[in-house]
Length: 559
Image 1 (cartoon, rainbow, N blue to C red):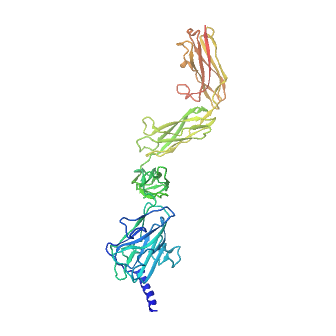
Image 2: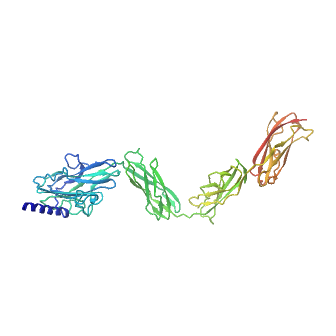
């Protein structure tokens, strides 16, 4: 009866000793380690053990002791990253402690997994949980009463099981660390080896960790512009590389943060392309310096990794204002014909602070693409020697009758703000004037004697436009039966003077060509072209003339 009472008292005393201030003793140079369960003998490896496995699989590690003083128990808290490994249980299977010679009683004062969450209190997984325990922690303690191991001691202390729940290019299977670890065999490390016959701790006791790797390691590089103006936007590019198998391209997302958002802000994230890179925008806010850190989150076969960019200097540069105007000429075209739209960008700051004309590009839009389409953009060039004005042009192509305008948007450059033009002058796409019924009359057998030595071409034409149009007839020769003769057009006298026709008006245009007697006996071929424009040049000719239709024929010259 006395013996029955003594045993629980001894158990209680030893339990309290381990849970509050356990007795510690170890030989200098002894170590505790995480190893594989297959290791023989069950000691510590020359290099740290490594474990692997795909998500969903399970594996078991052994916590061993190597070259230690005589022991009768231990209290050890393992820790892993719970996003990669989930602790499942811990057992004393294969341990040297329960089999020590002379043992008459054993105690298990701690078996706590993930702070006991998911386990019934008092059952393995929720025994003796304390302040050192938490998510990712396995605490296991075991005590043998009445027996000590022989020194030096080498063998297994306990095993711990894990389930793989994430991917990693390298995460430790280690120990709880920090000030919560008191009275332990290592300073600030929750590893305690007990010896019931002696006391004290041995600081040189080693605690070797293992690692878990189930994804290729990666490196992330972030490249940003070295400098940028406040208010402007540039690009930061992240490139993620598999450092184990360079031909394996990581996929997934890279997230970004700026080290100083008062200086510059960066886009939140981007998705890697097939080349392993992606980009976000960095916008300068105020003068100063910042860096950008990009963090790759990993994928099924690649571990995540961070990377920090070069230093970005944001400077404040005075920017000049601009104005943009667009003029299209001619203002009236037929379907299929083109008008030239010229954008003029002017530095409007007085006096200009920039010694160069605006540069960059102007983009264009048509107000009515069913009537006409316009070129997408053009690149500015200084207007002559100007340091304040630049121009460039695109084509507007008529599609169907109607009217449209063109708007130009200047995007700005490093020293000029952008600007948007008002709508251009109205461009009319019209039904072109025409020879009425194809009517063009001339003398087919031209007698020079009877026709005053001249051939006259008379065209009946109509201006179908809703605005006045200048019309003219241009005669072009297409050859003769004898070379070197006088009827060789084009020439100045092959074009009729421009005639203004009111909107919807019809009339005739006549052009007369004088032929010498040396042309008698010759047959000439020609084409009469009807040309039109809404305006004249300063010299009185058609401005940007267009050809609407034509009529071809021939005539013979007789005496």
